[in-house]
Image (cartoon, rainbow, N blue to C red; front, top):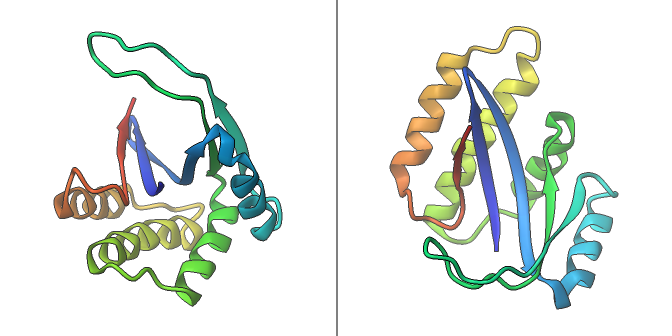
Length: 136
């Protein structure tokens, strides 16, 4: 499971690329990180019992890239090897615009532009697995 995500933090936006796998597939996550020249980090999520708000969660590992200069490598990969699903490709292209806007306007980011792109991304399909919206 992979995602092109963003997080709203007050008036700013954090952008992420992440992949989640079961703990027994950790080797796959490590190989993906190696493929991307060791950018990003690997995190472990412990197993947790079911609660009234969520079901049982098995242990998992996450590969996450958050630094904007490292996200450029992710963009280069998906530009070279495009996603096959039309909906996922559309979501990626919007997320890509957000990444490129932050890269190209590092000192003068227009948060209205990012907000408009975020709304467009959210409008595609809030239930899509290709992106998730996190707010703080």
